[in-house]
Length: 67
Image 1 (tube, rainbow, N blue to C red):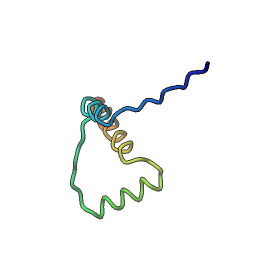
Image 2: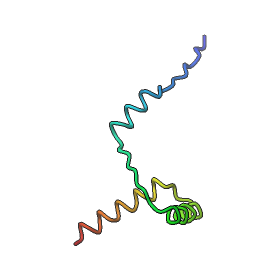
Image 3: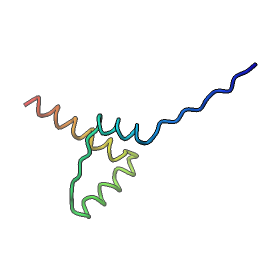
Image 4: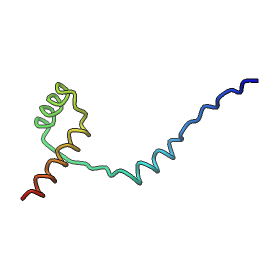
């Protein structure tokens, strides 16, 4: 007799606890014009906002270590 596989779902509460434990949110305020130009550029380059910021942070920290 074949048994039916059980579908499992991760609850949003579990995901929220994990994200709170592993990640940190940041908020910044910038001029609308600058943000609009940046959003357009990264959209054209197909780079997610979070990935762009992560790369910029890593590059900054690497450059800082070289000084």
